[in-house]
Image 1 (spheres, rainbow, N blue to C red):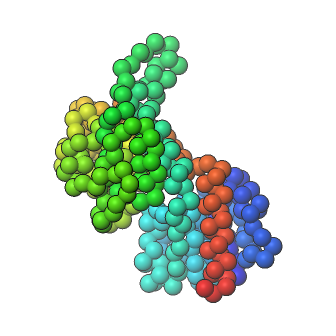
Image 2 (cartoon, helix red, strand yellow; image 1 turned 90 degrees about the horizontal axis):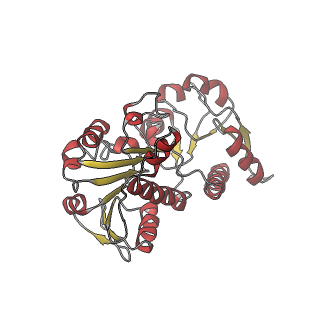
Image 3 (cartoon, rainbow, N blue to C red; image 1 turned 90 degrees about the vertical axis):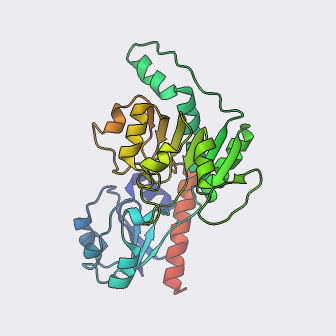
Length: 305
């Protein structure tokens, strides 16, 4: 059984070579990081397993690879790049996701974006590079309330970091949960009381556009929004309107509706926005965990388990 990592790039390709064992299934590593879906049938020909980091796999393209039986998606957000149910029902392709590998890395990014937004660091940096001494009033976060919208592994790590910083931690989850030092509350209270709202929802049909204009309007006035989950969980147009009006003081974003973020995008024109390039999970430690988990998937598939 052969696997193909279709969009490895140099960095993840090197990790795969380092961690792969001689007894593992053969893996073809494509070092070209950006591949169009139309090129996938040629790249995947002769492979039963596709390992995918960030390339879209439309169902009609998958039909053109008759030998493909498994997709190992490097993360939890496969739905942003493919339709897992359609792939299985129409093509007989099982989609496997990887959880937990970047919980600490992503939580640290959310924590960093929160502080960067609260202190106005990105704006001061831009101003000083342009020759302006842009002294900015910041927000003290010690003693403030952070609300976690969704509570999985990343949010649990975010809660740990925020508790260590002396913040009150509230959380809302679609199913009942409990965690030490975290008060689980209804959605209305979470929105109304959070000085910082950190988004940790998976993207699916139920959560797409979850932070709608109506829900954004229920946020505490002057709140900070942090999103390291998926851009489409937030109604982008409504968020921009709230930022322009000042109802939302700041948005610190690692994820977007369209990635890469197009040049001249409205979010790049707003001073009260801090941007990072969907890089929260990109640490050497998370990379090793991610690749090891992908290889484990390949081993189980090859073993028929």
